[in-house]
Image (cartoon, rainbow, N blue to C red; front, side):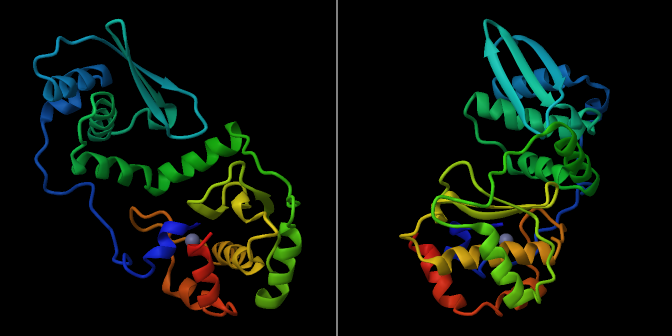
Length: 259
Ligand SMILES: [Zn+2]
């Protein structure tokens, strides 16, 4: 993935970010005997000790993602959680309760909960489950390669010849649905698709910027991501080294900052 924010502080946050789920943190043993609804009740009491408890309903839904939502209406608190989280360990259910109730009541979420939850989502078996439900349930929108001013297939094949000896298999190529300034490009391995921000489908924007974003995503295709920590978009040393082969790299990076 390539985003414009990253472009603005490249190289600064490369430290490994690996934590242990089973750290020496004390846990309440009650946790393991609670139902999800009881966990939400306890967390709510912790956040708002003087608020009378609403009726609480926790539902697991068949989603094509790991999203969850919370709603309080007429004394009924409804929590909807993606079913890939069904059966998650109690500390994870508790962490999500702090996140969702924090959102509902505009309270800051203690880092240990947000971190623990994120770490769980990034575990190999969860990522595999997610990838599977996306393939089965999700129909991701990928437009064709032809944009209004630019054709992604042409650019892909030109870069393929120039930098990969024409050997990269062509994935689905498409433009993002919205004109995103944040994420400029994204390689999605579960759909074998490279999606480029529509902001670059513009004859007035330098072609070099688009070529560089495409090249970057092609490298993700070439060097599968190493998921070792919390950060999802990992640029290994090997990746960075390969990226330096791009002609006019510094110039292209400068252009992205000015899009
Ligand atoms: Zn990237």
